[in-house]
Image 1 (spheres, rainbow, N blue to C red):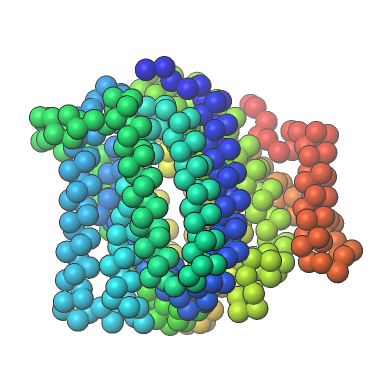
Image 2: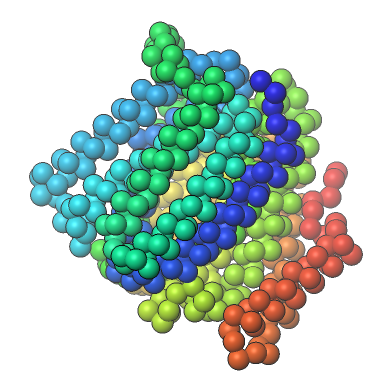
Length: 483
């Protein structure tokens, strides 16, 4: 199989993420408004709760699957093994959801949520996870280009259909969940067809005889150091969203979900590169080509951070405008949460690439220890900000940002040490980027028109133009200098 080049794969992923960014912006502009703060808050609560629960059962096995398949594409037994893992995961979440409702614990675990919405959210979150597994397979086999085209078409059609539903029938939480489920089933069928055509995922792969015990041992060796950490970290994640729902209510969960959704758009432009870099890390470490690993880290990490910072800083300075453009007066309370969460994608970029290097280098125990320490630190912050200070969405945003900022830079220290680099240069680069871009964003905040949208667009144009001129004049200030 001829692999697409690294540059071509990144360009297609970036193009796909630009489309996703635009469509997600439009979805954020219409879905929260159509659902209202309470229903939108319930949607975010259920989505985050089930995503965390699925991550708990996943136990980083999907990362092990992708890492091992990327390192050696000929190992089809990995796909067979993980097919049964996926089936088992679905059975477990079904039994858990049913049991919670049968023992009448639903009102405690899912406060103020309809039972039908619980089961629909379970299916929706499982299908979302499964679609990510299919995409990991395509990335591992370097067939990113056709898959990204499929994702682009799917996202555009999804946006058109949601417009039709809202205008023709109105949007409730139930039909929004049904719509997402049907949309994901169609995407999975198309991806299955493509991977079958490429002779990667045909029926033989699902039912071939493999050494289950041997593959299980491999996965166990990879995942077991992280099991206790995952158990603690995800339990804390579930507790966080439950605490916010219980103490502050669905509206504050909606505010937090909206802030997270808008800030996540900043990450779309850099997340395109993460699975590709992870694949290159795995292959280079397998070949013991540490110079290439060092070069990849030095070249891409500062660049991707600068791109994230460009978007994040602008969002932070225009948070009030974005809320008025995307939603209505009912979401004014999300302002501070959005300002804070705007900076979350900055270190999310670092975090994903740090994790990719930890996993590729099989430094899983160190990754676990760092993560465990900061998960417990995060629990204390949740208790302080959400329970004691009752800051609601703003408190949860502070918790997320502080934990991310500190933990990622600790990871950076150890990765830089592994690569025989200095972490100080990367940290100074982080600070410098935000200071420069923050100054430009402040100076380009304009109010020349009666229209909020026109002022926002003009500010964005001036901000972008000055940033580009600055990079052309001082390119070394937005990269980490080579040693």
